[in-house]
Image (cartoon, rainbow, N blue to C red; front, side):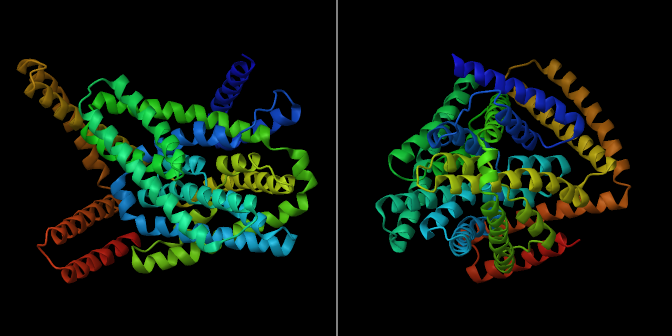
Amino acid sequence: MELLEEIIVLLLISCTVGVFVKYIRFPYTIALVLVGLFVGLAKLLPEIKLTQDIVFFLILPPLLFEGAINTDLENFKNNFKPILILATIGVFLCVVFTGYALHLLLNVPLILALLFGAMITPTDPVSVLATFKKLGVPKRLSTIVEGESILNDGTGIVIFSILLEMLRIGKFDLLAAISNFFVVCIGGVIIGLLLGYAAYQILKYIDDHLIEVTITLILAFSAFIIAENFHVSGVIAVVTAGLIIGNYGREFSMSPSTRISLINFWGFIVFIVNSLVFILIGIDIHVDKILNYWNAILVAIPIVLFSRALSIYPLLNLASFIDKKIPALWQHIIFWGGLHGTIPVALALSLNLEQKDLITSMVFGVVLFSLVIQGITLEFIVKKKFGKEDRIIRYEEVLGRIMAAKAAKREVKKMLLEGEIQESLANKIISDLDAIIQQLSNEYSKLMEDKELYKRIWVRAWKRVLMAQKSAIVESCIKGLISEHVLDKLTSEIDEELTKLEDM
């Protein structure tokens, strides 16, 4: 009963903070951490620890699943090379550099220092993506940041688990660690694919939005639990299953009303989870311990930042040679937007080691710096480059209304075809929608008289055209209609055109 009362109080605080920050335009998640710090210092509530089990089995599955179902698989695949490089080689670089630097500068035992590197590497894109969405950052940049975060959660946690086991048995075996890493990751993908595909097939035969949404809830938690019981990555299993439901189940197995219910339900769940988690991070961060280890924290922060830079700039420039170019400005945003939040704190609180206070204090210090300093300054950096003007906002409003009206028109025609409504009623609704579309189209045409806006839309449209061409060429090669030599030649030409558009 006491726990329920405490959760209700936390939600009440979260809602109050949410209303307040809308007026002062302050990042919601960062405000929650700061309020949590105050609540913890004032001891207004008993401490509710974010244990490893709570985070892994209750918090991570919904956060990961919601992110995955809202990830466009086509965009994810188109940017898979830089995402994969950052989430694998980048994570390894961060862990190794951070570990060895702490070992040399603070005389922390090497395996313990590497464990800290694995704990602090996972990034939390919640507040970053909220900023991106508000300011209209290019979709490709959002996809890279979100994709890296989704995957590096998995790789970071897997490396942490392997190192923790080695620390427990007192033996460090690099080859065994690498082989175990690949087994755990691939196993997670396989289980996620199997469960996601099974759920997708079941959803085909159900037309009840409550049952369908419940199935996705069961899938999110069961994918994690089953994968962990098989000793493979539950994180990667949840992400894989979510990608299948979000890109195939939602598109081919769900009615429009179910899709709306699905998005609203998972949006609500994630709001509740994030609200509780970020305020608990503030409560669980012990300021007195941070003050006791302030010198170690001042060493850890620049090390973590430098290791992040080491994993971003060289690797993204390398990715630019094998994939589409990633502009320097984007690289700066990806570097500074690598905020650390829920997972590092949860992993730190779950430790039971001799030097736990030192490690947890460094984690708390880095997380606090990341969420508060990086989180606040990031919005100013992004806004300076990507902040939207009124005419852009109006254009998007008109475009959204046109797309909504046309989608409604298609739905009415489908209802007429299936006999759900009479022809006279359908014609009346279609006539009303046509009038709305015509009015909006006239305003759209006036907006297109602005040369700069026209250029932006032209560039965006040509990117879509070129990506469609690239997809058709790849499909032609798969069908055996063109050779791989021709495929390479044509896709290289398209990539060059895409690079030119990025620079415009």
